[in-house]
Length: 349
Image 1: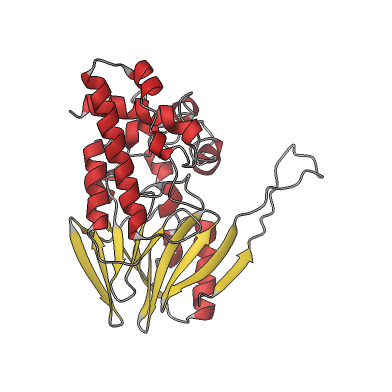
Image 2: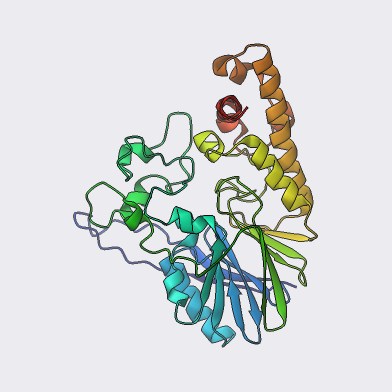
């Protein structure tokens, strides 16, 4: 039986020029849920991480953000009374990787080797909504504002990005500002790595390029559980994995063939429970297979249309993906998926 602890975080906002009677937005609920044995999920609204408790300390995945990490550390100290020894990044995107310094006194930080490349001072690989269009080594508001054909990740890629990261308020977010609250990994790996702490083993593997180019999948063999973030469930997933991909940036600038290979890598693992960085339930291997089948069907249908000489405007009218009509965001995102697939397949033939 799972044990759930939920604490609502209250945030007081002092905003110049805001009337005193204006209500502050509700803070995301922060919670801890037992998954199996000593494996737990920590949640901040629709953002999730996992941690494994051992006699010698805790192995934590994404810290998520400074506020959540601070709350979580207090909870871990109170409930388990052992320190965090490792923080393992699922990938380097700011909405999952911030807050690690909260655990820096006791923890080593682990990530895929591409994290170091993404943090070397250049514009890093970013989710599809972020593009340095003018090549000035910074992001401006107009470069991340919603494109007409793509949705905002509920504020993550829009005004909230600047409110949090434009520290000097000059309407430019530099790589230094972007990474200000992301601690660099101390330990990196290329393909696979094993950590052992307190007699418990955690396997790390890089599934390939999908939403990120520095992704890590965490495997907990004894618990028969797996954790990954933003792949396969992106930030639009809530109660079900049956959700149309956001398709931002023509699938985050990575070939669709690489996405399919990443799905197959995940499917090949031996697990019963899939915990995701987004979504309220846990998932199973069949959810991964269904997502992979969606990508294969999308590729096949768009490729067939391209072979007939159809362009994006014609394809979005003819590629209906009827099999997926009941998926969340079908009406909103079907055309975007088709058009993004067209440009992806055209670029990565």
